[in-house]
Length: 314
Image (cartoon, rainbow, N blue to C red; front, side):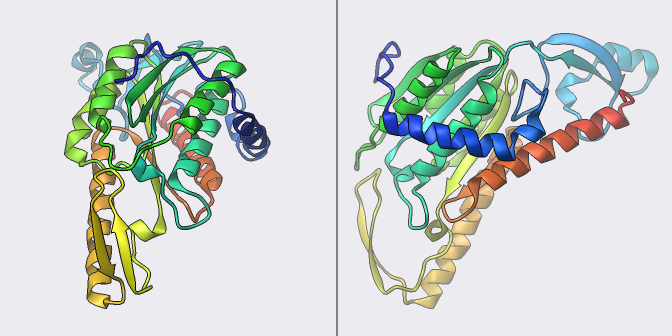
């Protein structure tokens, strides 16, 4: 297992270049949505108690104030005051399964770009950014700190962690347990992965993180993971176990079974994320990932505004 005190690498010029391009895209397409909101991607709750208001559909039942509810005979929740500074943690999957792509990008490229956008949106105004990068030698922990150079070093760590075929790294669930022991301060946790581990191995750990933190899960998907193209006999390698199989993609029944099972797998992943209380964005290697991220931010802001309006705070 890698030493959590492993020093950060020197900033890779390629990563710095990618981040500069991301800054332009993010500023153009997202900044208008985020103006004045220090929590950025996930407008949520702080750690200091605030006013009580009547419960409305969609509120987190964990914030019900039972004393006020008993006095008024109507359910009330206790609002919280947002912290002046946000601590954001990235959980970056750099295992062999994400080093795959048949469209415009690999899943690893997609997750790196998403990590860059999240970093840009959450590292402003004195906010701190930390990371747990899960690679073939186990997770490497980068403490949460401020500053652009620190952000660049985290992204360089993610970009330069090379997976190795046939190596079974620490599972996603075990990585989340590691983060829970480190991230003590209430904040935002963003999990960047393809979530191909059995959901039963990570759902409870994700839900446990959600008792303290806002959660956002960014899932990377390649189209061939959802539907096989009819291209004849394919040699398929499981990069994390090393197993090799030949698949005849000309068989329509086989392709139909594959699509059915792939759909069930993605439904199970989505269900596990929702049950853990996390927000979920699915990014495809053949899609516009920044548009998906912008859509998520816009939806969150509308939801927060509607909740405040219904709750009588406007």
